[in-house]
Image 1 (cartoon, helix red, strand yellow):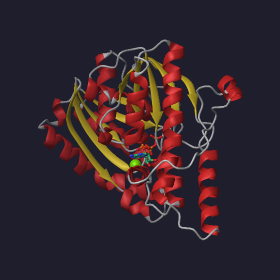
Image 2 (spheres, helix red, strand yellow; image 1 turned 90 degrees about the vertical axis):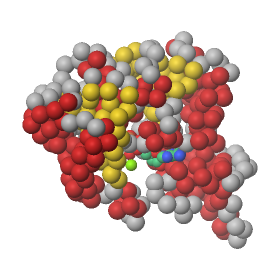
Image 3 (spheres, helix red, strand yellow; image 1 turned 180 degrees about the vertical axis):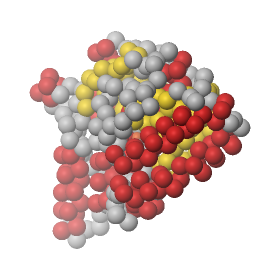
Image 4 (cartoon, helix red, strand yellow; image 1 turned 30 degrees about the vertical axis):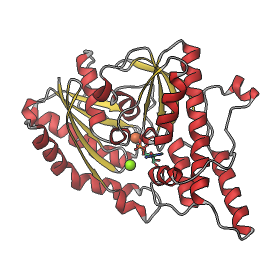
Length: 343
Ligand code: ATP
Ligand code: MG
Ligand code: FE
């Protein structure tokens, strides 16, 4: 099937066009620069930017793919979770395109799309698989028996998301927003010299929170360490702090992901979401999984952060699996649970 995907859950207007497992176009217009001075995404600004970018970005994607709207088999759109006003722009546009072109509409889950996008890189995902989903707003381990019909949460963060931790630590180190890539880059120049806490890895957590995450204590530990340095008048070794913080996050994420595979008897680990772009996470996951005979799938960094290709990829998978389309009164659901693949 040929599917056009629309993503507007946060600050990226992403339009992707996918045929089967082949990516034909991935056009992204970002309003990230407009939010940078606020240190976070401003919902009203994001909605307005989506509205302005929608039609030209759809046109750009169609031109790149060399297809017409009348050629596509379905329109897929992120129905949630995300910013309500931002989602509404995408959902309204998708309905308009679906209605105008007489095509079925698929409202899809943004988080499931972060997992589905890997098929564009590595082909169909073997099922069952374990998915480590690490993004700006979510950090979860999922058992994926069928990406078309449903996933089972194994664990999730009990406080901050992994991406949120990167963004908060970047802020306290004076690095720009969003902070994931700046920390990744700083860490390459630094050494792992500080032992920061590994949240929820103690013996009792192993029983009660085996596949859950916690990053808020780590963020506080980094803040305390930096404050103590500043008080003593010594310079803050920014690159070493970045490397040590990143190591703590990646250590916990990979340890728990591989433990989840072992506990489920599953040999495929797929990693998705913006934090999956992290170079240390990618290297550590591949290395640790190889030692256990587990195959790791991580899409290229550009497909890890928000984009329309991931929505088109999931839409294509749903069409191929014979899943029913959404109704034309599809709502945007800012709190859509990961257990719902379609809206
Ligand atoms: P969600 O998917 O939960 O709705 P989101 O869509 O806003 O959240 P994504 O675009 O999936 O989030 O991911 C953005 C997050 O990824 C940000 O927190 C950003 O700092 C982080 N990120 C991006 N690149 C990197 C990197 N190289 N290393 C670590 N984190 C990164
Ligand atoms: Mg973004
Ligand atoms: Fe996302």
